[in-house]
Length: 122
Image (cartoon, rainbow, N blue to C red; front, side):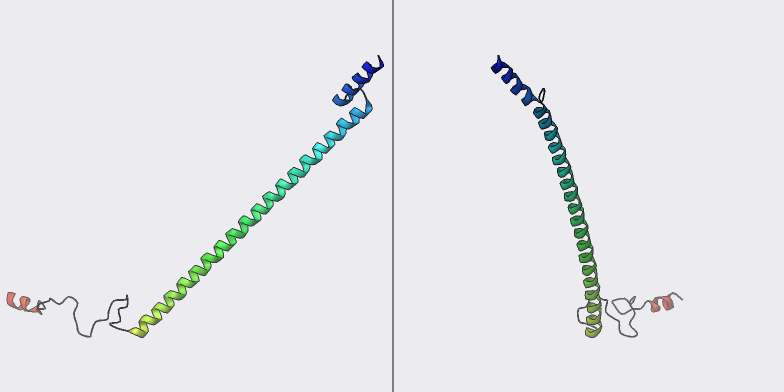
């Protein structure tokens, strides 16, 4: 009989019923679980904060790169304009060539200005 009651006591202790040790163990296990959950939550929050910081840093770097690119483009444009002014006419610059004084862009290719036609009509 003593062996049977001893076995029942062990079963109850494992389940957390009957004996004081079992109940204390269950309470201790629950406390450990709560602490572990809190630690996990804190770790997750820290990871999220780190990710947000990394994203902000990446955005700042991208903005800085864009600003640098824009500045470089502006500098290149200024340099190109300066080179075009130095090279002048016939240098193959992208700007249209300047015409000589007195040349008429509407002048016909055969040399007839069209003024003769008006005289002929009269």
